[in-house]
Length: 230
Ligand code: ADP
Ligand code: ADP
Image (cartoon, rainbow, N blue to C red; front, side, top):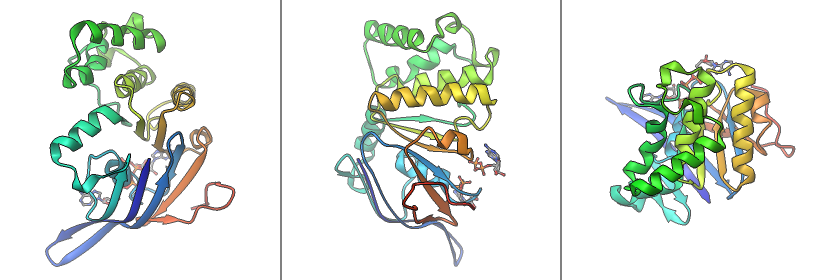
């Protein structure tokens, strides 16, 4: 599903080049549940953003579903993003002025899904995630855990093949975190490929593979796919 070849990400400032990612080579198969770990500042968010088309690599080749991302037009990239990728953020990134229902519906509006179908899709996901009773509330009226359930609902309403999550449980208590990870596990069982960034070994254990990043480079995966102490 994903091939990264010699990916660099750097920032040029005056005469100084600062590398954020250097020489990243990575293959991720459809159906994997991958966790990216590593110290703060290692480049985890940057890598996730590149994978999710939210940022561009400076050098190297990113192939997603057989397409070289670099060669896609902005329009095609945006279409690809909308139809194949869902994103979950640590701070939820919901729109506080919109109801739960409207937040979840938003990606369908961008995709110009017809009203009747939108209603059916949102109703289905509210039911699946057990939040029908919250549909007319606004995000600030919900707990963090509930807001993240809405964040996940919004991310997957368009049935993406790939779900990316940047510290999805970073602001949550352990019970809420486990609820979100259980949702991820179910989605992965249903065939959604998941890549998450987390600092938590417990959350990483829900996945099937851990990738360690340090100073912008991948630390070699050990044969047991265990986290490397950092
Ligand atoms: P960002 O993704 O916004 O760059 P960081 O990964 O830099 O956030 O994390 C910010 C700070 O919070 C760091 O000091 C990091 O070690 C700490 N942190 C984040 N999540 C956790 C966690 N689950 N457990 C412990 N520390 C964490
Ligand atoms: P992590 O998620 O592992 O904490 P990040 O990907 O957020 O790491 O950031 C990696 C490093 O790159 C950090 O030192 C950060 O300050 C720097 N960085 C990220 N984005 C930019 C940017 N747009 N301009 C300058 N520095 C950046």
